[in-house]
Length: 172
Image (cartoon, rainbow, N blue to C red; front, top):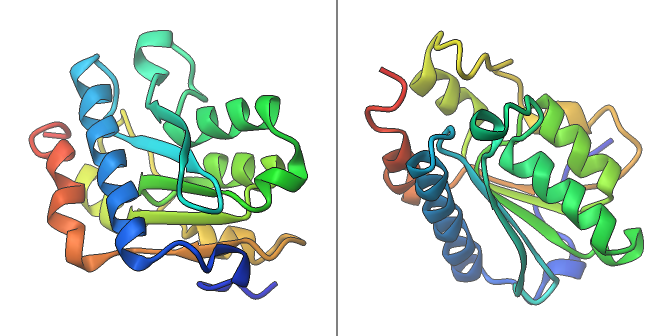
């Protein structure tokens, strides 16, 4: 399956809007960290870029190993909206979705993923910290084995320092 960065369904969302919504995920990541969770944030936006669902990581405080921000957004989205609607939505996330989160996004039928920091950069940032046992595996690779043409954009080098900010000192 070919993974694309552009699709007419999302033509109304500009590069600047992508950056704005990614920056919101950084704020959510900071909120997650402040509440005792790992510093990740995600949100769901409709085809016009309107925020529908926001979520910080909750896995530590809820003791739910699936409580990643992206999986939680996908779960909430699938219980709130139908699959046809979600196919025209974007999941924004501060860091590239892990294998589990990519699967949740795929099964929820969310049509686009936009992330700031690559899984590889996250892996370099967290190292071997047991709080984030990363697969160091691209969501594009995972999605290429599926049957849906989910659009993927990221990473965004121009905001990498901002994306890393919630992680500074956390994984030491």
